[in-house]
Image (cartoon, rainbow, N blue to C red; front, side, top):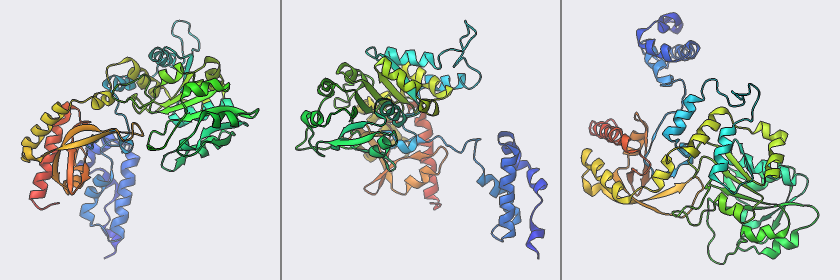
Amino acid sequence: MDARRAVPRTDAVLADPRLGTVLERLDRATVKAAVLTAQGEVRAGRLLPEHVVADVLGRLPVAATSLRPVVNATGVVLHTNLGRAPLSGDAQDALLAAAGYVDVEFGLLSGVRARRGRGTLDALRTAVPLVGDVHVSNNGAAALLLAVTALAAGQEVLVSRGELVEIGDGFRLPDLLVATGARLREVGTTNRTALRDYADAIGPETGCVLKVHPSNFRITGFTSAVPTRDLAGLGVPVVVDIGSGLLAPERLLPDEPDAATALRDGATLVTASGDKLLGGPQAGLLLGDADVVERCRRLPLARALRVDKLTLAALEATLRGRPTPTRLALHADPAVLHERAEQLAERTGAGTRAVVPHTGRVGGGGAPGLDLPGWAVAYPEHYAALLRRGDPPVVGRVADGRCLIDLRCVPVEQDDALAAAVSRVQRTAANGQA
């Protein structure tokens, strides 16, 4: 029989009642494209005609976006692959408020154009009182790009060899700096850099000194680095990239640099990320000398790197609102985590002996080597894949032949959903469907 005769008509498939709810939430063209793909599978002999609708349903996203909310049970607070910082409820509400028409660049009293994102900028100035002015770009690398372009395009940037980091996915600091039109001049050695190394390198071509926090690794042993306060006395602008977005000192993270301290020590500009320790949306924070910040803001590049209204809204709510999920996870009480883990173990029949000590991490390139003491529930290793394929997907940590479920980053209100997800996996495994 000609395979083409077995292919169900497009209009017949689209009229199938099983696709009714799908057509309500997705564009018709999206659904039709999935139907055409399934029809092609029938023609090729890889799909039975009676399975076309099921195939279409399997191909389509559960919502208009293919991004799926997941339960982060890894114990890593700022998990880059899971979107780093989860937004607070205040920030989520701000996103909804900003989804329509808003006065992002309009003065309601004056009726004329106003400073873009002025509320967010005011909130950032309030959070760091020592700052001269602030600017927000679309990520931390963009903030650094603007800073170096404004201060050192066509000139030299002095950087310690021990701070020439790779920031992830193959993106390296030297490549970023060269893209600004500046010339990179390395000083010192990998493990030790002294003030005289910078002083000897300064000349008429020096645009700025760049100090980078090596936030995703640690060098220990015979090491030395020059503090910001000493670099500030060299007579050239100093840009400090703190990376993680910590705006003020944090007792839990004594070795993590913060913007307020860097500015107090004489930094001309400080650059940071908004979606790390600050706990907000992806954004690049640029704080420092008012005149230099204005130079950065007026660069044509700043227009290409500017943030949209949604980011501005979420960032302002992060700064003005209640404690973020990031902060709550970092400061989670180990005793409370232990109690929640025991409850999960009991509800899923694993027993309290399945509760084991587990060390959480800050993640996101922040506080490398810092242990966050906590607890996890240990399940068979093959549960990990089954949990990831569930609804909601649960991402745990696989280690030592076990699937470890750490509740540090799981909001308390998700405990019931997490227990239900594990129970479904247990039933699936018991029925031999793994």
